Length: 331
Image (cartoon, rainbow, N blue to C red; front, side):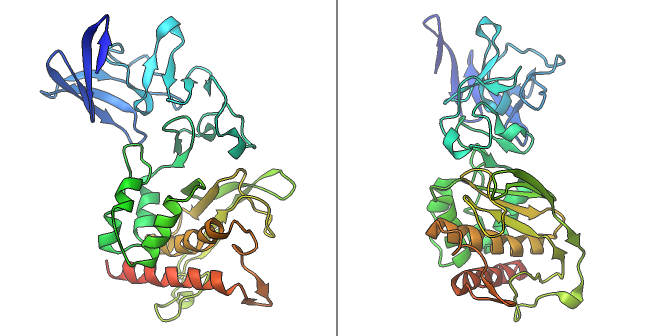
């Protein structure tokens, strides 16, 4: 309940609020921004359009109707400072930067402790000013496609468009892929999953580098089958640089996470089956092994000639890919 001058002003409810005996509802976009407020009769009470970092367009209407706007956060206009309340910190949309340092700054040493969403608010959200998670229906769909129809019902976004921990932990399953996802979700390491055709990483000298992700269209001649699943192949015959798991610390590959989080980037050009299969490789193989061991060597491939002798990792990857293929073919 919101009081002003000792008088009840507004009652906040899920998805909107009550004011003067009338219900008002938020209409949000995919980033959780309140784009419109409509009343119980469907009449528009407020329209707000945003620049990427949260500043409102001049064309917005009835701006003072209610203050919950960008990312659903409250806009504080006192003293004309125009800051959004992100619980842990205040965001100044004019700069745009947080007004205080990140309480988790030690986890992101390659970024300014005042920066908002890695300077990419079109790709990321920051629900409380602390941790950043990737968003996007395509990334969620990719994860769901590794699971059975029953298990995938329990993998959904919460109101902040993060994987709903309460929902996924409410479900019991014998599935290896569901168990792997549950372990990743409950890990104390931040894990980001995204789709793209390039990525940034930190090399072993501490420099930030960029790399493009190549793509080769499907060729049935080189396709895996359900009876012959390989580490780096797909049942579609697609190939190229299909995905990567950037892990904290330094590894033989020289491609490391720029902070203490795990970043899983999958090639956005892949088909839905290939995305799911290769996500199984990166997330349920490399990322999960690192979560369990905190060891870069054990989390990576170890080749003797053309043979990978890291048998525990190979088994994790192949088991996960086989389950994903079975689940996708059973759709």
